[in-house]
Image 1 (cartoon, rainbow, N blue to C red):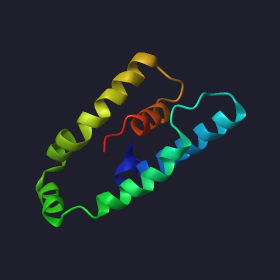
Image 2 (cartoon, helix red, strand yellow; image 1 turned 135 degrees about the vertical axis):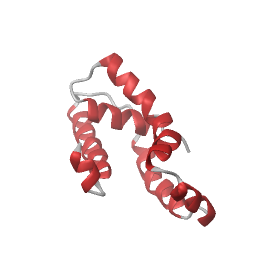
Image 3 (cartoon, rainbow, N blue to C red; image 1 turned 180 degrees about the horizontal axis):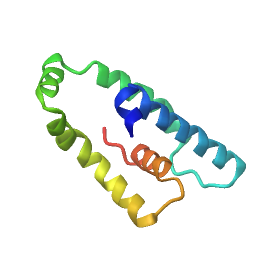
Image 4 (tube, rainbow, N blue to C red; image 1 turned 135 degrees about the horizontal axis):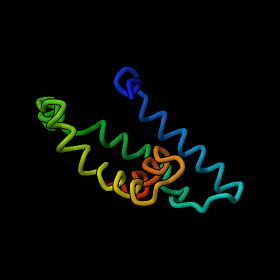
Length: 107
């Protein structure tokens, strides 16, 4: 969407909303939990580790064109989530994809 290009925290906020909505559904018993609560603190740790990545790696990523960056770094991770959403056709595909990404994230 257009907001994804104008708001720097768009995807972060979307994932946080999905987690909150999913947690509420699990607490109410309307949905089974697909990620463990113990994995949530790990998200912060991974973010800190990524921020401390070597400078040369960050520079090489910055050298990529936007299209190349998306092809090399985003599409391999996002494509399976989109395929699952297309197969299962959930009522809220954005939340489904966000939860799939959290469940199947790679270190």
